[in-house]
Image 1: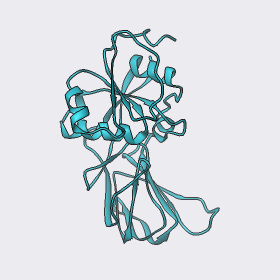
Image 2 (image 1 turned 30 degrees about the vertical axis):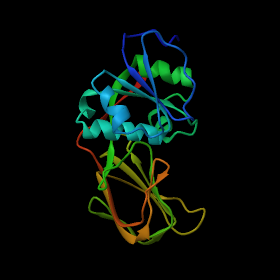
Image 3 (image 1 turned 90 degrees about the vertical axis):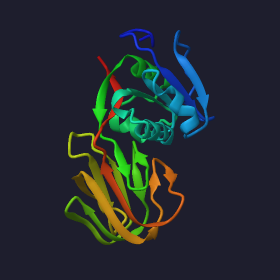
Image 4 (image 1 turned 60 degrees about the vertical axis):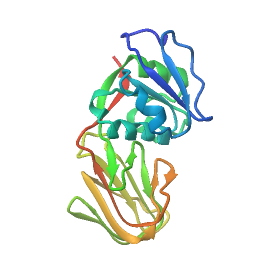
Length: 226
């Protein structure tokens, strides 16, 4: 399919950093080359110009979504995504192509599908996956105890199955033991100081308390061709 077929959508493409995938030329599409994980100065001027298409990593997408959140544009701005990494958690979670031309076609011609957005209590978001490595503490999924003691890892991602918002996987003990999975609206942990990772980017400092929760507004992700 040509990336110009389907419904007529004007949009702004943010090509993020040196790792951004090459894109085919599309007539009438505004392309902006920005730094990886772009910030206020690069994103905010574009938030009133229709759909945003992010070409980059999951962390780049999260950075753009943070700006939409802070500008209160989340509910009015469709967002498309062209993954730089074939192993993108966002692409796997929401069934997006990882081939740049196909991903751009979906971003231009696909349907807007509201999907859960996960926030944290330090002003960040995750669009693909948040993780803790080896950790010791007490964690809750809503009112249920998810961990009391040590875990080899904890993974948190948006719920792609229509559940309450978050899917939490807690891996304890032996190497080949399966993780215990929880679905909830909020995940909280108090622990020995450690550093979570948000969409592949380590948090800049160690923390001993952390919360991930479903935001009240969904991310208006463009996916699935009509």
